[in-house]
Length: 268
Image (cartoon, rainbow, N blue to C red; front, top):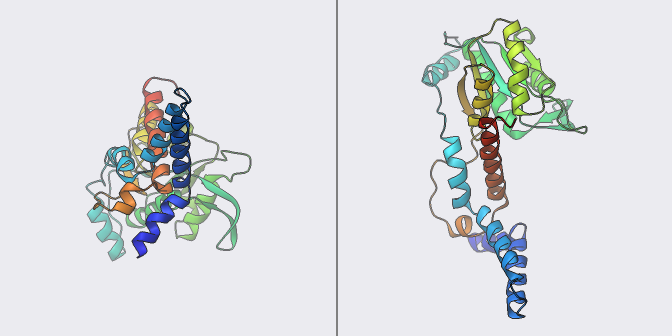
C-alpha cells in the first residue's frame, strides 16, 4: 500500500503535477488542431519528466561522482582515527570548498549554518585532521547579500568539532569555484603549503580539481557528500515517476558539465 501512495503522491506534487499539466495541455492543443503549438509544450513536459527520473539523473551524476576515489591512505587513516593516533601522509594541508550556507538560523547556540553538502565535507575534514594533525583551510565567502560567509561558519563548526583554532585558515572572499582556487593559492603559499588535499562534493570534484590545477595547485582530491548510490534496483515508484530530488540532481550535474566546459575553454 505504501508504494501505491508514494506512486500517486509523485504525480500530485511538483514536478509531477507540472509534467501532467504540460502533457494534458499538449493533448488538448493537438485535439483542437492548433497547428504545431502542442509540440513545444509536449517537448517541455517530456524533458521535465525525463530530467526528474532516477535513471536519467543517474546517467548524469554517476560519471562525475566516479571521477575520483578515496586516496589509498583511506583505510590507514580510518584505523589511525579509531586508535587515537596520527600518521604521516603525503599532504601538508586539508582544503575544504564552500558549498552554501543559511543565514540567521540557529546552530548549536550560534547563528548561521553551512549547507548539508558542506557539513559532510567538514565532518570528513575533522576526521582527517584528527588522524593526521594537518591544518584545515576553508574557502567560501558570502555569495549573495542575504547569505552567510561560508568560511567563517565552517571555522566555528570545525573548532567545535575539536580542530584547534591555530590549525584553521579561512578564505572568506570567494563566491565561485574559480575564485575559491584563485584566492586559495596565495593563502596556501603564504603559509608554505604545497601539497593540498582537496575535499569537495563528489559531484563537484572534477570541476574543482580543474580550477585548482589551472591555478597551478596540484591537489589530491578526496570526494565527499555523494548524491547518488553506486547501484540501484529497479523500482516503478522511483524509476518511472518524477522526483524533485532527481530533478535537482540532474540540474546540478548539468551545471557541472557546463562549468567544466567553460573552464576548459577559458570562459571563466
